[in-house]
Length: 446
Image (cartoon, rainbow, N blue to C red; front, side):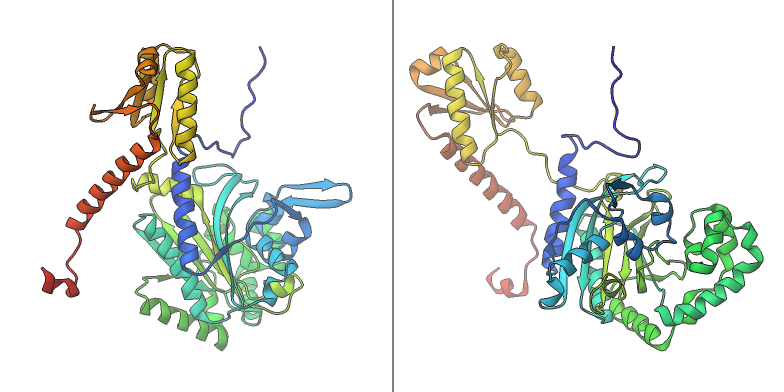
């Protein structure tokens, strides 16, 4: 007996019984982004490795430990470990930054990192991300943060805390690096091998190390907020003011530095305490130097990424509502070849009008067909046999109530369903209207 091949460690299958949950997140994410003026962009699954070396940073965990890279002839390609670099490359290559600014795009995509798999952390994971290029105003930071908050609220999530920080610009970071090296120098030999190599190149990366020992050493390290230049400090203060105007609660967390080198000034994370160690469900910030670094003109930019698996983990934990999975509108139970052919034609007609119709494909008996109809949750069933074909009439049975409606086989079945669903929709509207508040303009009519 041959061995069953299993999916790679750190990946997941999304089964038909769960895919409606993904559709819920994707639909609400798209609609929310488009409410804020963002349009969808799509880009390749793999890019030239140099793109990530230049953008993400050679001293980051992502580049040093986590990228999936292959050599194709004489060129190195890497599966995308995140979405920002590919988005900016696409913007530059296709001239989007020569059009009206700011450019606003969003994406829903898979990413790949070779990490130790655990709940909320996979080697293939999926992100909803947004990127805005062209605005250096802190109001743009507030707008992107508001988009993230709005999406989380529309998904029904609660008890999520916004943490913000500023990691400054290259000017103020140079002084901060000196302070960090002075702090870590006495402990250099105690740091992990990776962080020892970061000591000279980028000591701020030590703050992002996942090693518990290095985290303990870094606990009392200097904070970047004490080293901000006037411009970065003013930017951060204005952002806080805008968030307060918008009624967005936040916590200043000087330990947030983000795991990628391209970030400047504002960084932020939306954090939940309900899904364990991987509690960051949305994170991002500003990366004003990235576009120039990748060959474009100096252009301010910012964005965020939101892990869909972590969002679903939290939505399940908090028992949030999901869109209903698509269920069968009508199932035709057939007896005999002629009945089967009629069911095929009726199903085709209904599908052309957007209804989900099924008929038997397994040569089951009538009792087994009805059992199957129940299992797939068919809203209506129709039995077609010799008597129905001879009389030209069938009974459409509503499975929930048992109510039956007689129809002529030559009638348009789609017309029957149109009337059924219009009636149900009107009932739902009436029920909802009973619970609506009375608006000031309506009071005189009450």
